[in-house]
Length: 455
Image 1 (cartoon, helix red, strand yellow):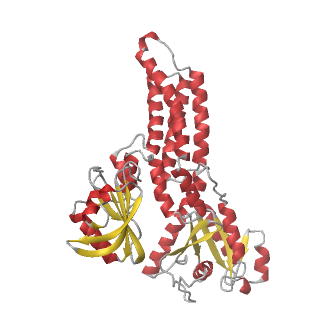
Image 2 (cartoon, rainbow, N blue to C red):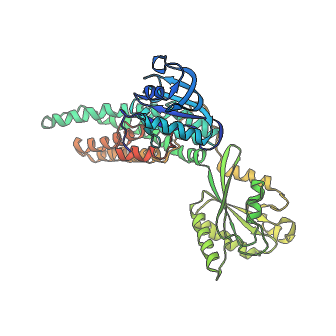
């Protein structure tokens, strides 16, 4: 995706579909002039920035709708370009007609994320802050909102810029040494450089370690509900969601494919995935469902494994738990159908860290929810907290840390300054990619293509 900033772009900024109002956004040098050609009311080109004007949108003399037009003049707009926002009635037909008219007068349709991309190119904010705009739009919990807001306000970027500035100082001294290579001078004191790198690595490690919590806050917790057929998985999903999402039947193998839905518990978004029962089967379709269950379990952040207390022996339970431990994914052992369980079995399972429930009548489901929250343990995000929530940032931080580790190893091994400089340049490159100080077209295309059109 390229950015032609001489173009004027247009897109619907509000959600698709019928609504009370819709907002159509334009940005570009000619956005005010183009809008004026379709507008009957005050002369928009003569109006000051940040003013609102009532009138009608017309096409060849035909009135399309009554509208309110907001005028923003460069550089005092989101994109730092001339910009217009047209508030019209929320009929999809009206929206389409207004956009068609604007296109006829010289605008073009915006690409995904192009408004934010222009804001980035014009210095409104850096790349990490631009990504936070998308995170803020998609935030589903208060923690996710606050984490995105903190990043958009530049807290994370300031941390990265500070680290980079400190490293650039020593990098320049080492580069200077290379210019005087024949004189065997050492401008960058190696002990000072070692101390700086260790200090930077400490900060990097704290940021890297914050990703586990940040990822949960941003993306939620994929939680697979697994177990043998008729263990009550679909009933549990319906109980957790408080709706009849999954078909419940006494016939084994009813669930053939994964059924997903989300709920928020304690400010954390849990994405529950009901899966096909685990068993050997000659039914081709069910067998595919079983394989998909196993794949889902491998990719899950957490597994709720249901045991049918009314129809399972202690030996079977122990065998299945060993298989779960081998899988290496955190799991919660849940004994379902508590009302039908033999007291002797319950007694034997007391030391196996079980949660006993009856999904059908909701017995102890609240206890299960508390255990889910205890397993995740996400702290409340406060204003100013610096946290890594983006996988791209996490990977860049790891690469920076490794590059600095190579610098330390190189100094211990007595390698020459030119090799130290290479690894320091790599560290600076990875840090620069986070905030967009260093970018490639492919990187930008990948990031902004994930934005919604109109943002």
